[in-house]
Image 1 (cartoon, one colour):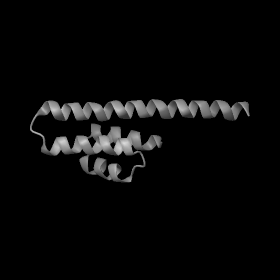
Image 2 (image 1 turned 180 degrees about the horizontal axis):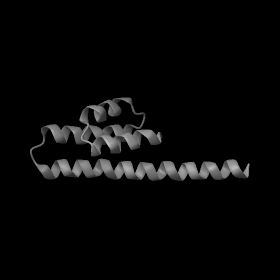
Image 3 (image 1 turned 90 degrees about the horizontal axis):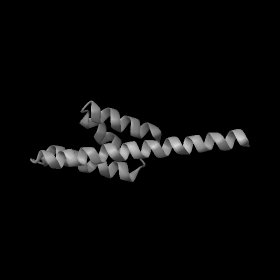
Length: 85
C-alpha cells in the first residue's frame, strides 16, 4: 500500500480536483481505493439524489482513513523491527 496515494486521494477530493482523482484511480495499485473512487465519481457525475453522492463520498473518505491507519501501523511495526534487529 502506498501512503502517497491516500494523501493524494484525500487532497484531490478536498479540492474537488476530479480529473486528478480519476488519474489516481487508474494509476493506483490499491484496487479497493480505485473502486471507491470510481463509485464516487460515477455518483457525482450521474446521480441526481444528493444522499447517494454523499454516501459514496463518505465511503471513500472512510476507506482513505482506514488505509492510512493501516499504513501508519505497518510503518511503526517496521521501525520497531529495524531498531530491534
